[in-house]
Image (cartoon, rainbow, N blue to C red; front, side):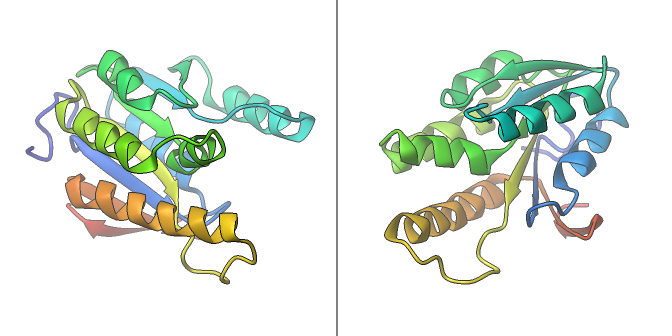
Length: 180
């Protein structure tokens, strides 16, 4: 893949990493807004409680009419294939919630990662993915927490390896790790 082979001037695949509340989503949104006339927002969160419903509503309100929102809490690869368009880049927010959904549903993580990577490679338009960098903190107390942390680290490494551009956010400030 060449860094801008999908029509908008964006890299074909961009991964935006950072800790919780680091500014990842806003950075990714602005990246697409500055490069295209419209964008597709692929949400992976599920509103399973009132607090999460409020967070989702706040995200939607902030985005405005530039964005068309689709939801893909589980079936991310087909959502990428159907919605990443050369003139409307796709923002996946976020891989962390997608992975959490898969783990809690008992899905085969390695197979799902393989499908995701294949889908990214074949996406017809630019894709910007947001993910938490979870390996910078304490070791989780529970086996599930440790399994999630390990799986998220592996997923981030796989996506970063195939991405044309990788950006790390800390305190709202971007640090380009890969690509221009």
